[in-house]
Image 1 (cartoon, rainbow, N blue to C red):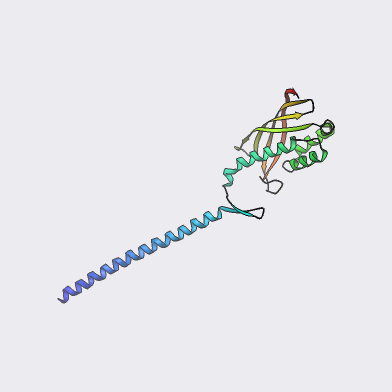
Image 2: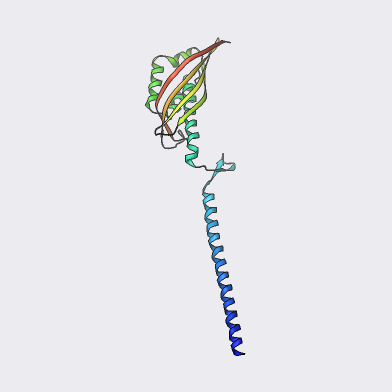
Length: 207
């Protein structure tokens, strides 16, 4: 009887030990899963940016991977530069304001064009003739296979006079350098080696 009793006690002890091991294993799994879940949650929270919109509403914007968004930022940078530099109204202050903002996005290669246009009286003729010049960027082709990145821009200019509208094609090339982001340069690029390779009349329509 004593032998059976000892055997039962030993069997019960083994069962308790087995249950204890299983319980501890489950606790360990739950602990590891909890830590991993907390880490993943913290990582996702760090990917979120909270933006205060004019001090009134709170908007949630998901930050995107920089390498994925860079091509779109490059095209936007080039597009914005062309719109500022080539869209002109017959007001000296407006021209100077747009050109100044455009020059902040580029190097001296653009300033040389600006100086050349000014010396040849290009801006004065726009003001004197009450001419509006509007530029529409059709496409921006960027090559990210090398650095500095290369960009080719295809655009259409409309030169609007009182008597007619002249449509011109504009094709330019440039290189893009990474630079610090700022309020004046939100996309973090600098245009260098800017070159106008085509700017010719397409048609003139009487008004």
